[in-house]
Length: 467
Length: 146
Image (cartoon, rainbow over all chains, first blue to last red; front, top):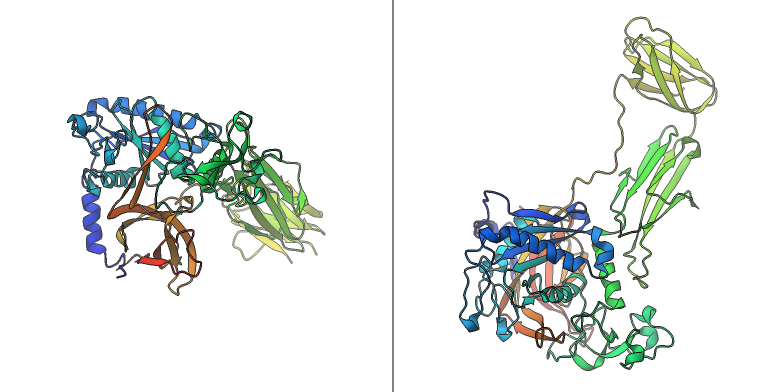
């Protein structure tokens, strides 16, 4: 049977579902969300959201400190440390009746907001919220997380529940959990590799029935020239690569990955996706960096926002591009004007009126992160470009800016454009009869003119090109 | 004769492209079982639905009213829970704990696209499956708001 739902037909159920999910949190004396790290608008940054679990009302300030510490622990390891400015972090503080979490085998049960528990599915340090093997109700755990995110941070990218319990524990998934044990953040970093970048597990513990699809850091390919991370394999590194002291620092093709001891390979002998307490290997770091840019890009805004301008007279034009910035360096900016690369490497460009030719002028900017952490980027995540077209119509074209009235009754006129045979500025009190105010010689650019004292009250001004 | 007309008015200046959001996204809360995907609720928000990495589990196809494919994607099947844990706390040696749920709920966020009429879900094919094997259809959800 195929289920067919429509948003229209779901109207009543929708309202009920929304009411049920939002009713515990729909009214707050004070919004529970606070900012831990702010580096830009939520739509242009990776947003990490921490939620409190097992913190009483008196402990919520401690939660905010714990969230800050957890954010730092995630963002101070490579490659995130080089892109810290690409992240925001927020803390949503909701109070539990009691501190801590459940430990069923010792009879400890705590009345907590998200009903977290250790020993999920028979694994001591597996710390989860419902639905799980102890409570199948989505509404009791993950449903509350979803409701809070919808209300306070719908543009979330990474969600971490910080559990106020010092026993080692955590879990991954769409919403991660991490305890306050000193080593717990390392589990979170491993899980971040899965949830943020789609990295696979590189350990060999069997997982019967797990899909045989490769991840960016796992493969069954043994042909050196076809391995997806071949850009990282030195020519002198044997493929497959035997594990040993001489290859410990090498990227190669090490057997054992994706829950298989044989037939599957990983890039490096040691990596955080295989063993905790180590760094992400080069291939995993590359994937993480590309995952950052796949979400936010290298160009995050531009001016003018309109990409096509039609001018009746050439005038100077300013172009700007907004980019994120890695730590301690800038992205590479390259401007081209009508196909010619310019020497300007900043995010601002001014094209003078005299440079703009009659016809179509093309201004393009390319912004690239040339980090050495990425050697292969077939999807071009680390590069964006923007192109503007400026069309200048031929012939005598004049543009008169709104005149400035001086205190003594004179007026200042700014005229730009082209008038090969000169022009006049005329004024009128009724838009029917026009009087010459100022005459000027040929113009190709801009000019500022001040007229003599004007008679009467004038409401309109115009330029007339001399033929 | 070429002329330009100017009244006593202020010139308009151009500022850097405003970051005020004209983008919106829809969050689909989906219930997933072994045989179907159904919609629990759909909420729209201002902002950007950032692309997610491709995963194995559930494939989806976004279609126009005429059946033209707008885009494709894939998400993890929330029914299959996998958690990595250390064999011994502090050992660094990882193993996994797995469970399969009869039903699970997940949220899929997509940019609001006026051309998108519906989204269809399929079970991701196994990598060893024949390319000619039809994917298992799991459900269709309308993306049109009333």
